[in-house]
Length: 469
Image (cartoon, rainbow, N blue to C red):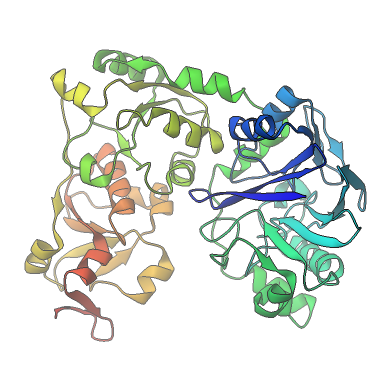
């Protein structure tokens, strides 16, 4: 028996590869099929099942492509309906992979079809559960994503989740391993641990949701503090239900090299967004006017989804040379399949063509500390509200990046402001969006709050003033 967790940090997502006696199963695969196909070929095993714990909202699964290539059956939970055909497992149905048994435990609440897969070894002993978004480490799945599809409120779904956890999961053995679909950083939960595997017994001790005295308390605990889900989530659900273009087609389309003139023509003809994936340190010094910077080195795909939202938006890429395939792959994972090409040779090609170049007004934290007037200067902090609450600059207004499409129209273009986040990644995204929409009266702080602390500047929160150590 082999169980391999394939964890993708930029999505905080765990897929699982299971092999026994020449047969394999994959649980919650990512979009691109090649890594899984390579494993199957290297080990000489046949893929029998592709198990999906639910219709994912935060990423597009690779189930359709994998079935097309391997012929494996796609398995969802009870009541699931797929345009491409799938097995809608019955509660308690057993699937054999070699000498292993995989039992479908219907655990609705996150979604109605949500299913936890219990794996029993060749001797029939319970070994682990693949809990999807039903049970995370330190948390449980949010119950507000499937309200429309279920015709239920988040509180009703939370009640279903309580029943699933307390009736189906908690009675299982403490030594059972828990393999969740996501870890810390995912928008599918609010309190996840950084670990990616744990025992059920430890989760019974440390997971707040598994220690509630009654259903009413559980519902309140899991629904408190939920933020608005990213707008692209519903579109990913539909792609997972209805199917999508083959990944190889998406990659081939996106890998069309463009000259500077050709890029302009594509943008003019299609309304494509110019997405620059370079680091903030490179972007601010020069970029294609109107382009948006979301660095490939950070949480690239989730931020594209949260801010661009519409997966049908055409995109052309500006990347560091050689990073085009990685960018296209990550975009496809969240449903952005309409990449129409990339600037061949990177931004240097644009410069060499003599095209107009834009820049971001950026300041070092040292210069900022010398210029900043706490009672006069406006500061916009694009970190999350919880980060802002811990430490903040005087006169700072918290306007989280994920809500920029809501607050940007309320910015007074005549008032200068400083812009920062924790380390510069999010503030440069915000700066590029602001500038693309005509706002130029601002200065971005290089390195953000982390740099303020690292260079000997810290916050006296009680006095609410910037001090130099």
